[in-house]
Length: 205
Image (cartoon, rainbow, N blue to C red; front, side):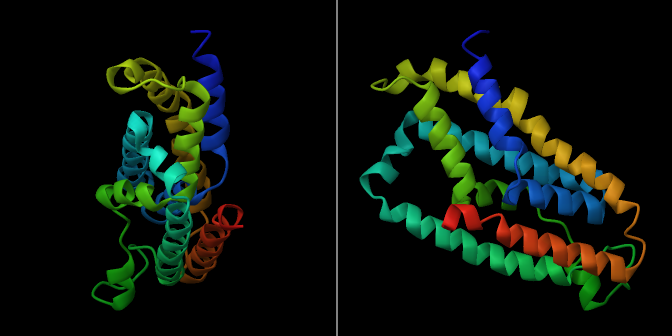
């Protein structure tokens, strides 16, 4: 348990801070309700844990060998987020948009698989995964020897990281009470779109 405490602290500190994942969970819960945000939350957690496991087994060494891949990854993610932010800014709540209209067609939450896939181009997720493995998995372990320390890192993010992401969705339920008109929804979604783009700035620069 004592060796797990630093991992729990790291998982909490990195997961509770703003980022693309937390912004998407918050935006989804506010617009479509907490239940609709669960697939987004599940995709974030599942995709990230798969990434940690892959990095723990040696995938992170690819970035050490070819640093240019990290630069490409950052800008690819930023481009995808710009497109997503544009869609979010124009989206409306499904209970406000008129059925059959273009606005109603846009009023759909992201899916579980989309969020699983997004983790692999999310620079913050890569930094968290690589940082956790570098800090808490001894150097020189290969194959099955690394499974136990990597499993401890996975457990740390399940216990301390996942609830942080979920908390962003729960927090947005209070915001959802005020989204009772198209104008308020538009202001909120434009704000979320801007925050989503700004959440990438520390990683880009």
